[in-house]
Length: 315
Image (cartoon, rainbow, N blue to C red):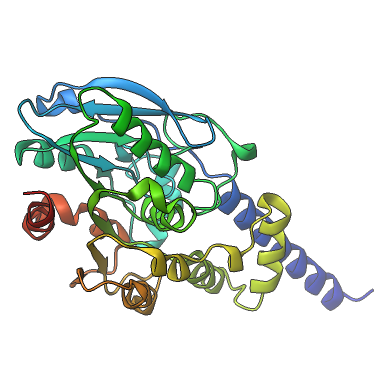
C-alpha cells in the first residue's frame, strides 16, 4: 500500500469520525444549566413541576403579576434552558464561537420585561434540557416529542387554580417554536382559546445541518448524516418539518429572525411565515448582524413590537 493510499484512508477516517461526532451532538444535546434566576431581577417566583402530555416531568418557574389576568408561557431554543445559555463559558463557548455566537444569552430579563408589562409568566425547560427530566432515550427530535411539552404547559396552566381562567399567550423560541408548531399539528384542541404566539427564529433542522456540514468540509455527506440521526433518534430530517407544521398554526403569530444568520437561510423562516394560513401574522427581520444569538436577545433590546403584539390580542 502506498503512502498516498494511507493518507487517503486517514482523511476518510477523519471525515467519518467528524460526521459521527456531529450526529452524536445533534442527537444528544449538551444541557445548559439554569444559570440565572428571577430573583436576580427582584422577581418573586415559584419553582413548579408539571407533566408533559406523555407524563415527562418538566421544571419551570411561575412568576406572578398580582392583579393580572394574563399569562405568557415561555420556552427556549435548542440546547438552552429557561434561563438561557452560558456560551461565554466552556464547553459551550467552543461549540458556538466559530459561528460568531460565543457570548452569553441570559433570557431572564425577558421575564422581567413581561412581568413589568403586566403579564404572569410560566417559563419551563423542555425535556432533555435544563432541569427537566430525560425522556425518549435523551434524544432531541425537533418537535416530534417536544411538542408534548408545549401541550403539557397549556394543560398545567388551565388546571392551576390561579391561572386557569387567564388569557394565554405563547412566547416560543427556536426549537420551542418548532415544538409549538408540531403540537398545533398533533394536538390542535390544546390551543383552543390561546390568544397569540410570538416566535423568534424557528428553524428547519435541514438548513442548519447543511450549513454545518459545509463548514466541516462534509457538504456531500447529507444523506450519510441523515442515516446516522435516524439510527440514533428514529427521526430523519424529512420528519423534522416546521415549514409543513406551520400550515396548522391558527393563532395570531409574530415571527422574527436575524436575516443574515450564518447558521440558516432567510428563506426558511419566510416559508414558515408564508405557510401560516391566517391573516393575523407578522414577520420582522433583524438586520446588521450574522449572529443567531442576537435574535434571542432582540426582545430585551427592543421589546416594543412584541409587547404590542401581545397587547393587541391580550388587551
